[in-house]
Image (cartoon, rainbow, N blue to C red; front, side, top):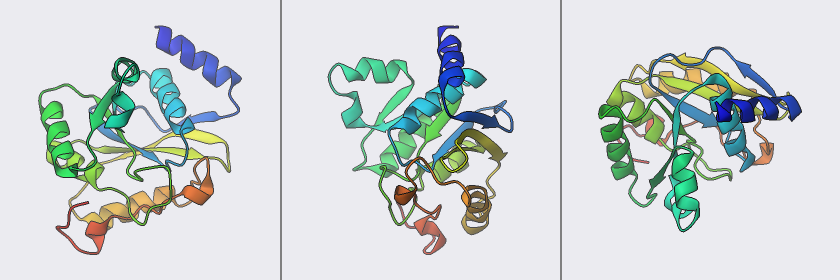
Length: 194
């Protein structure tokens, strides 16, 4: 109730406009992209709280140290060790299978700087759990943010990523110079880990 009130106040005062095809009605991996600013986190919470989506999100373990830990966990955070991405995927898949996660927010761009590839954890988690992928976005050029389509992945990485690229083609992020093109290493060399 309090979260929804905060979300209403945010959207009333914000320059951003919330655009959403539909809130997911089943457990999903929510892709947050382009991830170019710390403000993306605020927008993600405002979207989730407005649309009443129970979300968890992956964050680097340093965000959970000290006094920030309890706050980050209360906001749905799951600490991840980026040195072992395969373990992260296995841990999250285990939590999903245990029924602990409804909407799992993943920022496949990785850090907020331009990378050559997206991290493939979101794809592997979705395939391992059977969860669809919902495409969340931030677009400074239109001052819109929200949720796009929900896609069921086929296992054909290149074809699935073509659909994802098509959606994000006109989405710039808050800081367009930091945007990473939606592309996985697996498209070039199947079977490699990211």
